[in-house]
Amino acid sequence: MAREFDDLFVTKSNPELIEITAIGVDKAAMLDMFCKAKGILREETVAIGNSLNDLPMIEWAGVGVAIGNSDEILKA
Image (tube, rainbow, N blue to C red; front, side):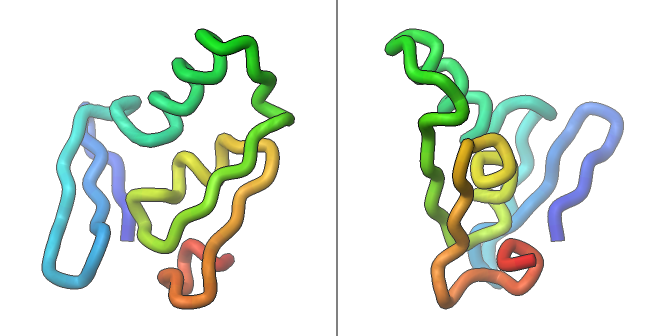
């Protein structure tokens, strides 16, 4: 499960690994920066993932795809 605390975002990319980052430091933020630099619109993007650390990116993208073996939260 992904959770936000005062200034931290905590998620996991597999059952044995948690990831702790500052809020806003995630795959969505990097994809946004890359797209702006290249002149690509958000609506023109596709993001594909399978772990909870991919959730911000999938929600950000014009089309978000959770692959078959994805976490159930991501599929929802």
